[in-house]
Amino acid sequence: MRAAGTLITVAPTGAESSKADVPGLPVTLEELVSTARACEAAGAGLVHVHVRDDDGRPTLDLARLRDTVQALRESTTLVVQLSTGGAVTDPLEQRLRVLDAEPDSCSLTCGTVNFGDDVFNNPWPFMVELYRRSQAREVVPEFELFDLGHVTALNRLLDTCGEPHGGKIHCDLVMGVPGGMPGTAQALVAAVAALPAGASWSATGIGRTTLPVALAALSAGGHLRVGLEDTVTFAKGQPVEDNAQLVRRAAELGTLAQRPPMSTDEARALLNVKDRTPARTAG
Ligand code: KMH
Ligand code: ZN
Image (cartoon, rainbow, N blue to C red):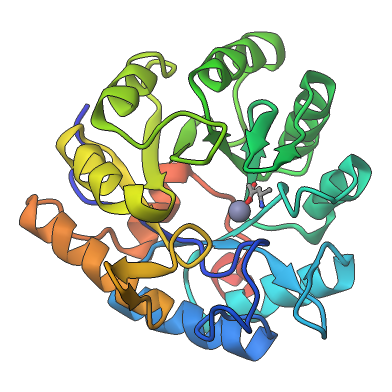
């Protein structure tokens, strides 16, 4: 079914770029919160979060993750998704513990993939354990699919472990990673055709595949993910200024396609995330 509005996910930081190379990268909590607010105002519905330490390096420190979730909940109405992918060097056990920070949603990558010169490790037993923990903690997973085989593994995961918390299956195609599926319309159509029935999905293209993937996703009825995690160049020779610039462009593309950005309430309904906001649960 074709979606009525466009869910815009922003992935503002990631684990790969440094502040020295990308000055607009939000690495402190203050920078992240102000980025999230600007992106919400520009049309984002969901924020995919990687956290940095005091030196700007990726960390999975649980106290920092908890503080980040709380600060984003206090300052925005965005769906807060924590990355369980982390950095390629992060141990699997630490990646599992991310769920203890009680985000609305978590990423769950459906297989191992070459990641440039590195390997992004997601063995089957890890996927199963992460999925079972997301069910137990009532966290909605977003299935990250870097390759066509990951779609097969997603279908196997659902067959083996049942439906996700909330009953909605939401996927994100991460395309154009060196080692994963290419960022082309043909690859996108093949991956979408293999998704579980009724799943919603977004797509993001890494680097110069950003625009072709966004346009292909909109034409195929999908949602959009953008952000400095995935792309640091806005156009040839023009670095991205900040994440909101990418969200504004995504919102313009969605509006042109007659699918303007979803509100954060619509994003919550799409994923059926648990209501964890004290003000909302109180009354
Ligand atoms: N940083 C990549 C190795 C995720 O957030 O779940 C993995 C990643 C995926 O970014
Ligand atoms: Zn990520």
